[in-house]
Image (cartoon, rainbow, N blue to C red; front, side, top):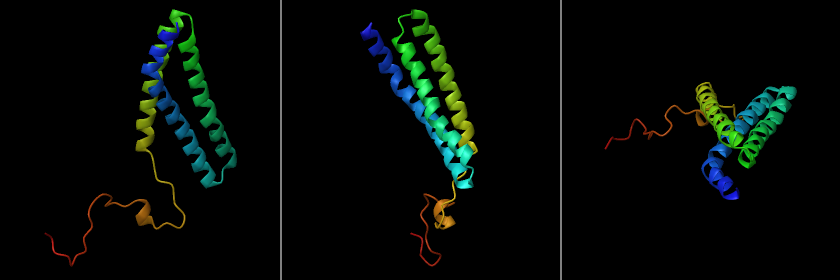
Length: 129
C-alpha cells in the first residue's frame, strides 16, 4: 500500500504543488491590489482565500492518495486532477491577458513598463556598426 502511494505521489506531487501555488498567488495578488486601493475588507477576504483554497485542494489530494478505496484513488482522484489542471490553465491564461502592473510609488514610469524592454538602446549620435 505504501509503495503504491509513493508511486502516485512521485508523478502527481509537483504538479499539485504548482496548482496550489498558482491559486495562492492569484488570491494574494488580488489582496495586494485591494490593499493598494484601500479596500481592507476585500483585501482580508482574498488573504483568507489565499490560504484556504490551496489548503482544501491539498487536503483533498492527500485524502485521495491515502484512501484505501480504489474508486476514490483512481476515478475520483484523476477526474479531480484533470479538472483542476484544466481550470488552472484556463484561469492562468485568462488572468495573464488581463494583467496590469501595479503602480510603484516613487519609481519613474519608464522603469515600471518599458516598451523597449530587452532591446539595446543607442543614442541618435552613435554610429551603427
